[in-house]
Length: 292
Image (tube, rainbow, N blue to C red; front, side, top):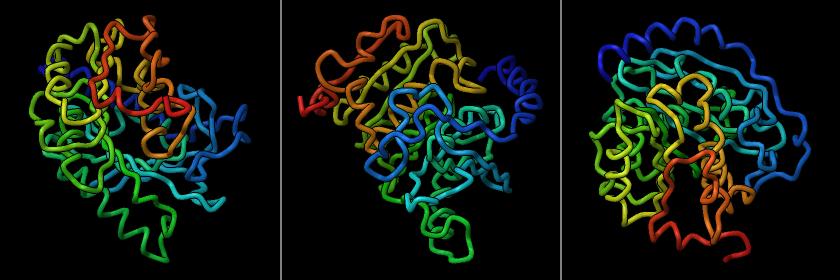
């Protein structure tokens, strides 16, 4: 990020760090049928808090956002590893990461402000593997290590793709990703997100990464009116679609399938949200609802 952007992020940090209280749990659809992995359904209310209260553990290398009552009903929780933008820390994105945790994910956010090589991000998986096997850990037997996604913003968006070279990662969500990455190094489904008014990472740069992803299922979404900082805090207009994507690929949430896949997909027609939208041929091969 340019110096001006980094200074603005730094100025926002203190205020965002004050938001580390408990996220309210959703109640309207908490009793809805569970997903394939046992996580409660939220219908299509992906922009609303999920059914779990959230705890946050700030450690030396990672900040963990996770459901307070992990595995209370025998469910295991998928993992999202997170990379920050240049000069930023997880607290800048705290409300978004808490939101994902309220939906049942364990988010391992690397504390590094230089996440591009995804080393600390991938180390988050190692930490959770050890804790999942440790009878003395609150994570014991509660982590769904078979379903892991990588996500991040700006430099961390590039890192989300870089992290997906790890065979343990099943999907990537690069939000306004920087250029220091190579989609050819992975073959997992990727949801590329750009901002229409992003003057730091131009939409054309994000679309170039998308166009270089013909060997994997890739979707491109350009959020109408969004600048480079629009995804910090609670994620803004990026919150709902990223939550839906992660729930589909990591939880098997069939409510999200038709928003991305199949003819006339829900997000394909949402001109109020997107100033640009595209799906490549491999993404078009992913079946929509009812196998269409």
